[in-house]
Length: 299
Image (cartoon, rainbow, N blue to C red; front, side, top):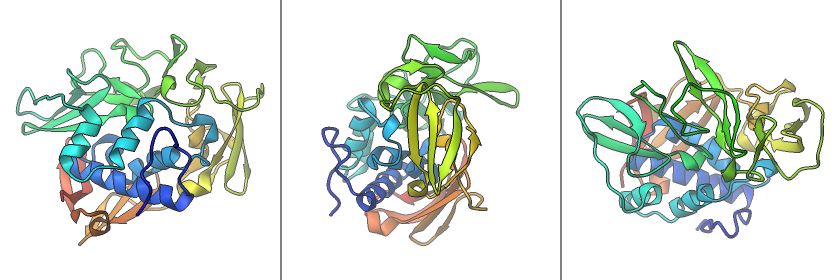
């Protein structure tokens, strides 16, 4: 039995225990809610490992509500438990039968996906973010600030970090809520950490699969190998995210199922889980508001 992760002792798990916890909780999120957003299995495990394994990114350790969500998810035994971890006792319904993404009206920071009046929840705080719904757009994403104005990069109020990424005809905020990670502050275009102060630019150096860099004024390291990734020297792929020093190496594309085995691909990282081993039903390809993705069936 893997020990239950608790906010009071977030670094108590061994690397192998952290991996098992990440796989189990991400499989349950996809099965009980939907593999939307970062709940897609491979993307979810990459992010969950950064919470459960404190040696991976010690300069950006999760805190506050992020820890509370993951601690709650390690204890679930049915889908009602999963929903309570994300939205508590609140309720919400889809407003219409069309397919759309939006921010919850009743649960701040939670992203909802509606398809044929079926509702799914994604709590952005699990990823150290909040729900962003830009003015005039009937969609939403997890990002750094709840502001509905046009995306403007940088720190807001010393806490929110907005990072504007162009995606075709629109611009998305992919930043962080810095109160949920590191030292809880936003400075110099990043969430600060407890490392030694430094002044050189955010250029990555690699020692095998460990990345080192000066980020937001503090020295930081990331264990890319523990994420199943490789360290990449030079400029960060995403200047606001030190973990972007790690890159996937797989040629995988999309998700697939084979009986109880779920195989998922995100950011060139392929991950698998046996659904039966985590007390869930066989894998199936489900249609989400963001396209087809693999998920275990509900228990």
